[in-house]
Image 1 (cartoon, rainbow, N blue to C red):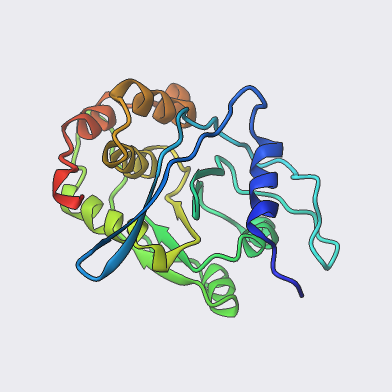
Image 2 (cartoon, rainbow, N blue to C red):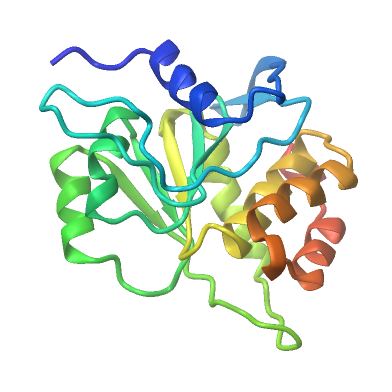
Length: 215
């Protein structure tokens, strides 16, 4: 079966995103320590996507349903909530190489089977779900996860936690700091996904995160 092209995936995202949001890309390849990194900046934060049909089907006639809170972060980088079997056809169409999983719980067996059958590598960074005022976002773990996300050899990749809001939002927010987004834009993107569940502690963590050591 012919692999979906980059244009195909961008079309999916474009169809799902609000037409009033335009994407402007500034692509730059960097090489540090023998590893390649691609720095791409979206001028405007992307809106959240819900688990709705893309209106497209795969070669087997299966309707493609993205996970809840699915969105394109950058070229080759996506985010979402925890995918289930209903989302597998959609994820397969992305031709993923890697998944960055931000929860400490073991990955479900049927998800592991999907990864194995599609040669997708799992990177797990166990970050406990936190609720204010008991806050403990491990900065070292976020840094290690960012190294995986920035390495283009792992692309295309999907970042997800349970609901695609807090842990995923913090990781993406720290990535945005590396891309020199303003705090206003970083918080706006975070709030689009977290909505009423937005946490001041998450935003404080992103504000204080020092991205300079990863550049």
